[in-house]
Amino acid sequence: MANEVEQAGELGFLLALVDPDEAARVRRRTGLRKESAATVTEPPRGPAWGLGLHHLPASVVWWMLQQDDPRVNALVYRHCDIDNRVRHDILSGVPHGPGRTRRVQVHKELARYPAPEVPRAAGPAELTSALREVGSMAQGRAAALMVGREDWAVVAEADRKQPLPGYARWALSVRPDCPPELRTQFGTHRKFTHRLEDAGIVDGPAVYATTTRPARETLSVLAMGRWAFPDRLAEAGAALEPLVRTELGGNTEAWAVLTQLLPTFTGTLPELVTTARAIAGDGDRDRDRDRDRDSEGEGEGDGAEEVDGPLSVGSGTTDPPGHQGDAEVVYGGPSWDTGQTLWDGGLPSGSTTGGRLSAGVRRIRTSWRRPGG
Image (cartoon, rainbow, N blue to C red; front, side, top):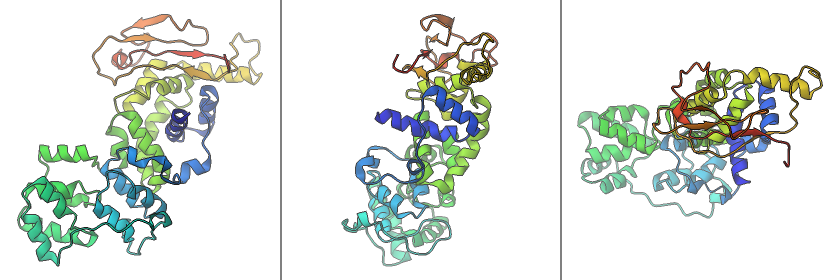
């Protein structure tokens, strides 16, 4: 049940990018329940959500903090990856949204938490001195805790005059609230860039939505973003919408394949979408439209098969496009034997991909069934 609820939210984010009528048809044919408005827009209550069990990229944490929403801050506070500086700022009501200066209300659930101790500098000179004395990662992390919202300008000026030690720059750059222009100033060395990638630093939600992997983790974060960082989520939606509308739209077969691929697909979200469409093919849109007419009594007598149950999708093991391996693909439909191999190591004839995505799926099995069958 927990997996079904989670997947409903993940696919709900994608379905919101297509035409509402198409989304409704996909929900009917796949049996995917519709989420309540509260589920989409309201943060979960209490620690039962288990935010601390999930690793959140540093940039995602920053987008959450930028909401300056006490309910979201309460969840961020309990996250296992958050350092004491962020917790201190949350309990102090420090605003993070662009241009905001008014103190943020602290959620009542945090009233019982003591304010964590963070090292303080007596002034810009002491802060600069502490950063220049950093000689290890541990020292870098300790010195980075001294930097508050009002101190980033001091850090940038000190680094311009004389580059700060590497460990200091590293510890500062992976802070969620480090200004992007300061990260750029710190350098673009390959090792430095790799460290930022490991911490989950990206250039905005659009980049996150289209380049991070695996797809399910990305989609889970974006679904959460509907309440966690709605002000920034539109950037991700705008980046994905053209692809989702073109490749998936109201093609229920493609959505069914995507549902099966999602749990184990190791590629990016755009790779997942294009792979699902390539496997399902193009004819599904017309076939689904005919079936819908039949179910409504509009196509009786035309020879089309009536289907009165949701599309059931079995489990499978998947890899992103480009994975080299034996690709056995089994595909079933309304009038097909689900155990029949339709092609081996390639896509159906007529595929516009020329077989390039064929190795992206180990096994695909879909079948039509009646409820309870």
